[in-house]
Image (cartoon, rainbow over all chains, first blue to last red; front, side, top):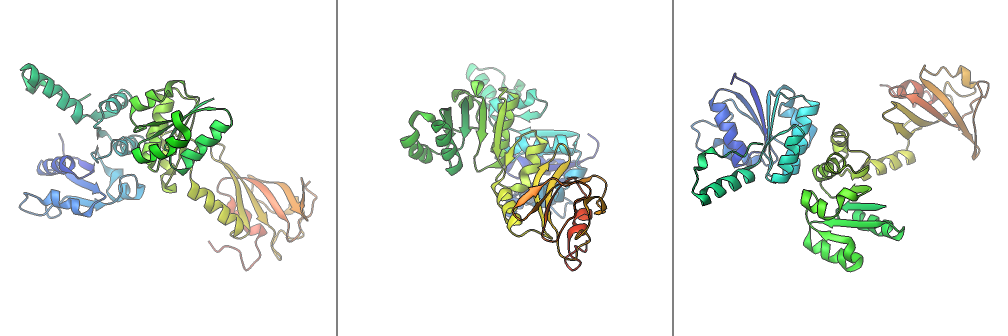
Length: 152
Length: 225
């Protein structure tokens, strides 16, 4: 992957982990979260602070257009919607796709039914619940769990 | 008509009651157990418990045969999503969404959810109607047609006072459609003369407000921008 600008909305365990690995690979990374304390997850286990490493962090509500603009959505090559709300993620991902024409948009959706339908509409949804279901089913059957994927 | 209403807050509950009184079939969906129990005492089988953004809950409420879906929860993202799946997945002809934060109206529009109703916006318009800026009141915005209908009060000493309609000096793309005077109204001709205190209704292309306003505002009150 060539070096790009990644915007991640929702800085929980998932968002912060993606942010740190993207940053470590040399990409420019901006993170938006409504909780100012969430930056602690970006700093955790790092030798330098997130901002010293060159990452940016914006406090704001995902649905607020001003917050998305402040976090740099207009220049984002990739957009990750990873807040704890499925509906928030689905709405902001469509904003990124339709209004800002972001090249790569990835959405976390916990509900498999919504993930499946929105995937059919052209969103790249990732459903951790579906992944867990498949892994657990394989584990119960004693099958090789490594081949599973929750990507629709 | 069969209506599915998501959200049994004050708006959803009262809408449900009104629609039932008008002999419509209604199902309200409410995700708070406590709220559900309160409303269920009155509306009984017309309310179901569950998260109305889950597809199976909407299906259980009969969304596939609904003529109308009304999303009036307190979360704009939920209202957008409910209306989007209602239209695009279940083919519901009419949807109405509540927009809690007027700054989110642009998202409703972007994702094709209309009409979206914002109480804040409506109240702001009423306030503007009471305290009009430079005598200008928005009566109607025809967004898709890119037209608006406004009402202007003719100020004393304004360029319009004493002028005939055809010599008002209005910009191209604007038209006087009626004049309200002494409690009555009439459709003017080009020769009708405008007086101070008249209320003039105009239809205009969007963006002409300022050019129109300066013809009707008094010198002191004319906007500087």
